[in-house]
Image (cartoon, rainbow, N blue to C red):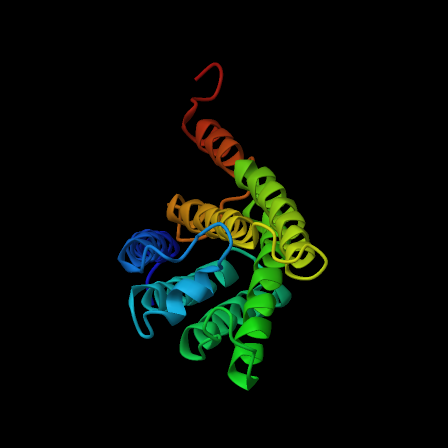
Length: 222
């Protein structure tokens, strides 16, 4: 099993690859698609099995890579379950397409929608729960990004229903950016762990240095 640091680095690589693929997927679609008023799923359905679907699968895999390292770092079972829900939601949304823009929703489209909802809600809650075990500067970033993601999710829900899809594409892309950044913070924090592949409690190093100092300091009067 790879160490905590290696898992973080591998996940960071997967997140970066997914981001590049998602950008390429937007560049390859028809110019008739408007990214401000159409969701990422609307872009993906025009290129089934293409780079956007691949990006979602890669991001799900990068998350799964983090799970053993997070357990070693002290993450609770609920956080791990939520991360698995995020990954499963991404995979389901990648495999099951939504409907073409302008067409009525069918069963597959509803499954795609609710898989996406599960993913979008599970990750920020997991990020909030991970703030405490990861600690340090990461804790502040994770809590801030978690709250930002939930706020953006609420904006997207408003746009999807009473807002008549006003700028829904923009709202979703900013939401995705916040959530992918949250996942990258988790991966980067784990990638920075060097001592035994687990988090080192604060103050541990100082106690150890003090013990070593007492052992090597000659007794007075010797």
